[in-house]
Amino acid sequence: MLGSEAIVMRTGSEPATARSALRMRLWLSLWGTLWALFGLGAFSLAGRPGWAVACAVVLVIAVLDLFVIAYRMRQGPRYQPGRDIPPYEPDHGDGRPGPPGQP
Image 1 (cartoon, one colour):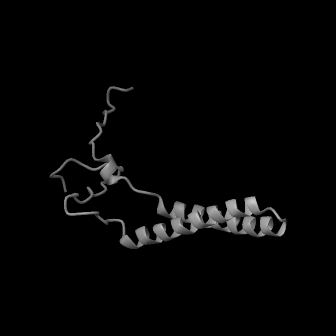
Image 2 (cartoon, rainbow, N blue to C red):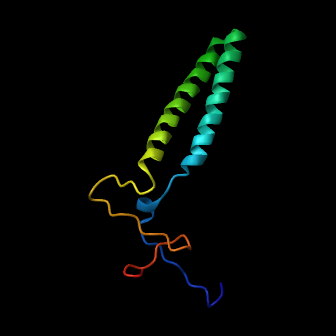
Image 3 (cartoon, rainbow, N blue to C red):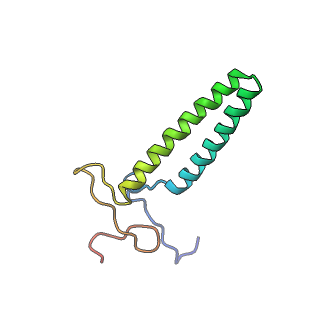
């Protein structure tokens, strides 16, 4: 490590400011829905009820996840769960929140 490099300390607010990659989750959930539908149809036609039920369970989970993702996307990026949770620190360009009091 170079002497000019600063060690950035953790702020402890990482769980409160964490973001989920909702678009990636949306596409993965759609991909899973399509494959579960395909598997459900294929195993039903092949006479494999156990595998068809497994695909149906995966299909239900993927569709429920789609609803959760759509709900969270509609809440927006600045949704706060309650009054006791402070707002997110603004992004200062480097991905880390700046010290309090800086514009």
